[in-house]
Amino acid sequence: MLKGIDPILSPELLKILAEMGHGDEIILADAHFPGATFCPQHVLRGDGLKIPDLLRGILPLFELDAYADPLIMMSAVEGDTLDPQVEADYLAAIRAVVPEAPAPVRIDRFAFYDRAEKAFACVITGTTAKYGNIVLKKGVTPLSS
Image (cartoon, rainbow, N blue to C red; front, side, top):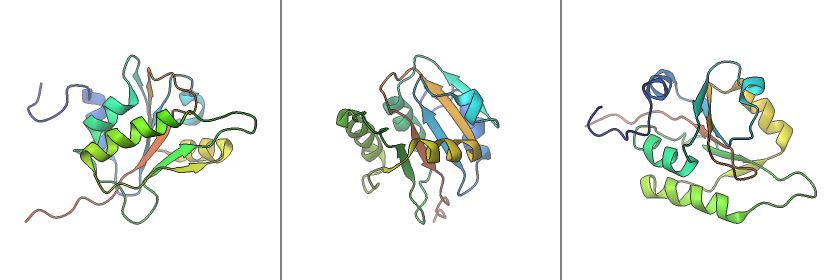
């Protein structure tokens, strides 16, 4: 165990986060997401983990992109409705660490799948909320003074 790093983050996930460069994306996916189909690079299992908890663990270590939309979620398919509590829970977890973070941008299901195919990694979680997937786009870590 390391000091100062949330124990929810596995060694494999820490390695992935460290290997990512600016502009790379990681998907925190709900339990329903077809990660093995759409994320051919790296798929990690986080069964039992909830996305808000992962957000609180990852974001102290991970700079969000300041030049592009850093948070992306899937829009509801026509005829479905979104549970607004899912985004509210994610945003609360995000803003607990990054108060100025923007709200997630919503994109169409198939555009989300296209994005997943290019993602650096995907973590399949135990979150069962419908449309519970979120993309984090990594930014440039600021210089220390």
